Length: 105
Image (cartoon, rainbow, N blue to C red):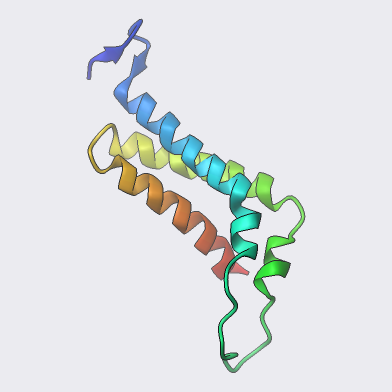
Protein backbone atom coordinates (compact mmCIF):
# COMPACT_ATOMS: atom_id res chain seq x y z
CA UNK A 1 0.00 0.00 0.00
CA UNK A 2 1.15 3.53 -0.73
CA UNK A 3 2.57 5.51 2.20
CA UNK A 4 1.37 8.85 3.46
CA UNK A 5 3.50 11.97 3.59
CA UNK A 6 7.15 11.00 4.07
CA UNK A 7 6.47 7.33 3.32
CA UNK A 8 6.94 6.01 6.86
CA UNK A 9 3.22 6.08 7.63
CA UNK A 10 1.00 3.64 5.80
CA UNK A 11 -2.78 3.58 5.58
CA UNK A 12 -2.83 0.46 7.76
CA UNK A 13 -0.80 2.20 10.46
CA UNK A 14 -3.16 5.17 10.32
CA UNK A 15 -6.16 2.84 10.68
CA UNK A 16 -4.55 1.06 13.64
CA UNK A 17 -3.73 4.37 15.33
CA UNK A 18 -7.19 5.81 14.79
CA UNK A 19 -8.98 2.70 16.07
CA UNK A 20 -6.57 2.48 19.00
CA UNK A 21 -7.38 6.07 19.93
CA UNK A 22 -11.10 5.29 19.80
CA UNK A 23 -10.53 2.33 22.12
CA UNK A 24 -8.41 4.39 24.53
CA UNK A 25 -10.94 7.24 24.62
CA UNK A 26 -13.75 4.78 25.27
CA UNK A 27 -11.72 3.25 28.07
CA UNK A 28 -11.12 6.62 29.69
CA UNK A 29 -14.83 7.43 29.53
CA UNK A 30 -15.77 3.87 30.51
CA UNK A 31 -16.53 4.41 34.21
CA UNK A 32 -18.86 7.31 33.40
CA UNK A 33 -20.64 5.33 30.69
CA UNK A 34 -20.98 2.19 32.82
CA UNK A 35 -22.36 4.16 35.77
CA UNK A 36 -25.08 5.61 33.51
CA UNK A 37 -26.43 2.20 32.47
CA UNK A 38 -29.96 1.47 33.69
CA UNK A 39 -30.37 -1.35 36.16
CA UNK A 40 -32.65 -4.18 35.01
CA UNK A 41 -36.23 -4.08 36.28
CA UNK A 42 -36.38 -7.65 37.58
CA UNK A 43 -33.63 -9.41 39.46
CA UNK A 44 -32.72 -12.82 37.96
CA UNK A 45 -32.51 -15.77 40.30
CA UNK A 46 -29.06 -16.71 41.46
CA UNK A 47 -26.30 -14.98 43.35
CA UNK A 48 -26.63 -11.22 43.84
CA UNK A 49 -24.77 -9.15 41.28
CA UNK A 50 -23.11 -5.79 41.85
CA UNK A 51 -24.83 -2.63 40.63
CA UNK A 52 -23.44 -0.81 37.62
CA UNK A 53 -22.30 2.03 39.89
CA UNK A 54 -20.22 -0.41 41.96
CA UNK A 55 -18.77 -1.91 38.78
CA UNK A 56 -17.91 1.59 37.54
CA UNK A 57 -16.28 2.39 40.89
CA UNK A 58 -13.60 -0.28 40.47
CA UNK A 59 -10.18 1.24 41.29
CA UNK A 60 -8.08 2.15 38.24
CA UNK A 61 -10.86 1.06 35.88
CA UNK A 62 -10.37 3.94 33.43
CA UNK A 63 -6.64 3.26 33.06
CA UNK A 64 -7.13 -0.48 32.60
CA UNK A 65 -9.91 -0.05 30.06
CA UNK A 66 -7.90 2.59 28.19
CA UNK A 67 -4.89 0.27 27.85
CA UNK A 68 -7.05 -2.68 26.82
CA UNK A 69 -9.07 -0.51 24.42
CA UNK A 70 -5.95 0.89 22.80
CA UNK A 71 -4.47 -2.58 22.38
CA UNK A 72 -7.62 -4.20 21.00
CA UNK A 73 -8.45 -1.19 18.87
CA UNK A 74 -4.99 -1.14 17.34
CA UNK A 75 -5.13 -4.84 16.54
CA UNK A 76 -8.56 -4.50 14.94
CA UNK A 77 -7.52 -1.42 12.96
CA UNK A 78 -4.35 -3.13 11.77
CA UNK A 79 -6.26 -6.20 10.59
CA UNK A 80 -9.16 -4.31 8.97
CA UNK A 81 -7.01 -1.60 7.42
CA UNK A 82 -8.20 1.64 5.91
CA UNK A 83 -11.48 0.37 4.46
CA UNK A 84 -15.05 1.71 4.41
CA UNK A 85 -16.02 -0.58 7.31
CA UNK A 86 -13.34 0.76 9.67
CA UNK A 87 -15.85 3.07 11.39
CA UNK A 88 -18.16 0.16 12.16
CA UNK A 89 -15.27 -1.85 13.57
CA UNK A 90 -14.16 1.09 15.72
CA UNK A 91 -17.71 1.32 17.10
CA UNK A 92 -17.69 -2.42 17.85
CA UNK A 93 -14.37 -2.09 19.69
CA UNK A 94 -15.88 0.60 21.92
CA UNK A 95 -19.13 -1.26 22.64
CA UNK A 96 -17.49 -4.65 23.17
CA UNK A 97 -14.88 -3.15 25.50
CA UNK A 98 -17.52 -1.78 27.86
CA UNK A 99 -19.97 -4.67 27.64
CA UNK A 100 -17.17 -7.16 28.07
CA UNK A 101 -16.16 -5.54 31.34
CA UNK A 102 -19.74 -5.35 32.59
CA UNK A 103 -20.41 -8.99 31.72
CA UNK A 104 -17.17 -10.14 33.30
CA UNK A 105 -18.17 -8.52 36.57
